[in-house]
Image 1 (spheres, rainbow, N blue to C red):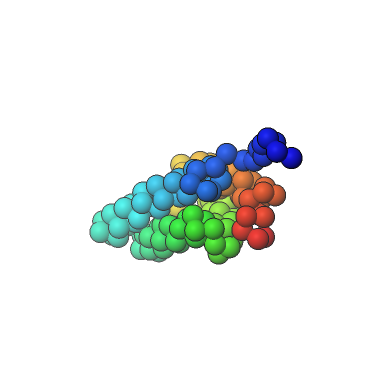
Image 2: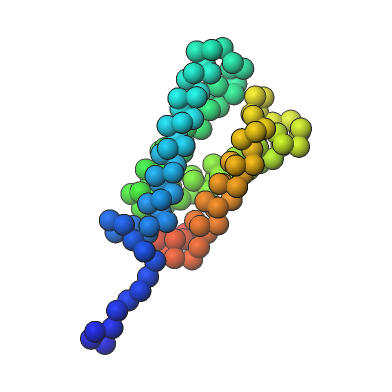
Length: 132
């Protein structure tokens, strides 16, 4: 029908606004963790956590790029890393074995953020965009 408008999710540069916001947040989190991981390595903080933090930052940055480029691996990787963060931080908060050095003070925020990211990525229109 002529004159009929299609209303879909808000978009930014051809991408869902939620994806653009998530990618921006992921890049910011990646930069923050990369800096913190390098600082921890320099300071000699528990090595396994320092390396984990740097690897985590690289992974979320790579997967954020994949999300931005509408690549399935970006979606899958972001969900996988978010699930891992929820598990690792939950174990730390419960004083159960996990990656040594994970700070408890960040756990609730990281878990909350990861759950929000997963819930958004599981929405039907987002899954369809990434052919999931």
